[in-house]
Length: 109
Image (cartoon, rainbow, N blue to C red; front, side, top):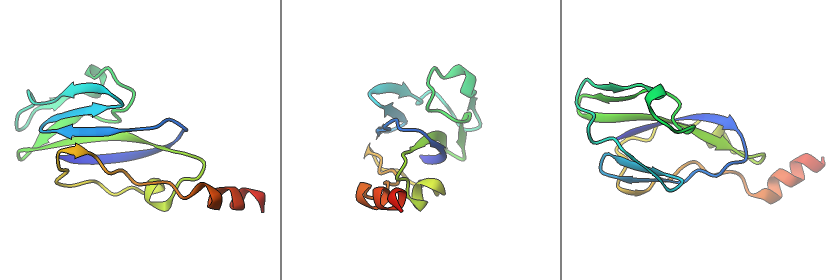
């Protein structure tokens, strides 16, 4: 699975858990196992605000694009996220924000 991330300034939390070709996004399950090579699932058919583009199966690899919420203390890794390749099953490690003490220091200056 390839997960592409689209940054968006918002204070929501995002937790993604991968299990095969299924994703749990903030506890909501999305079974994408019925998508086959060359298939496209339109974003409009997915009832979730977290999907930022169509879901595709390209050369046997599921390609998913998700919104990445960027808090006020967002990091460069969150602002300019790189695609996640060969995502293993389990909790997906997303780019982390800067420590809140750093962001607070920047705002106070």
